[in-house]
Image (cartoon, rainbow, N blue to C red):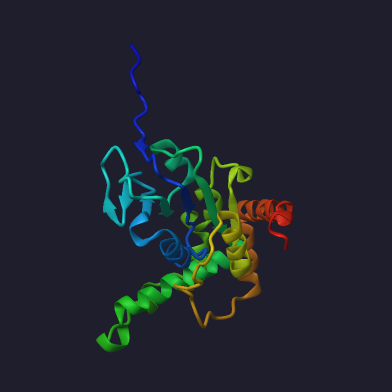
Length: 236
């Protein structure tokens, strides 16, 4: 007698898997997906790094099968975790966006700093916590959890198997290329979570950030080659 030992969550209707690495245009892209597929057909799908638990729209999911209306998954999860925990149909398209590594680290740091200032609202509340407790950019960058994050998210993946890899620096161009690939007749082009007024970074600090993210620079070079090989498909 045959017993099914595959304990992965079933995702029979999934057409697209969008792996969102932090600070690579993810919020904007999720809204585009919702516009193309419909609000109820795109779900924010996250797998927690420490617990490896699945969240749907930031709510813990403990079922054995994803709702049938969901066509696209988009969120923060490591490639190895979703492969291990979810049975994705072979026909599903895999998409991710990357970013120049040091720029991604700096954007992440300044975005989190901005959010922290907003949450504390120190000026109105008469506080002075940030000056005492906030880490510098270099301290943030040196933390192991913030190093080579793109490589960590994509560990175990072969970039050649991805159907599309976009670059933050070429967002509008690559979005148009993706629309051609996916057969989208139209799509919006919103931008969200853009960190503005970013201060200048000392060249020595920038050099160390680059050294701390050597794996990500290697990955980024692979993505550039992936993109170059497929230029003929998009005609530009």
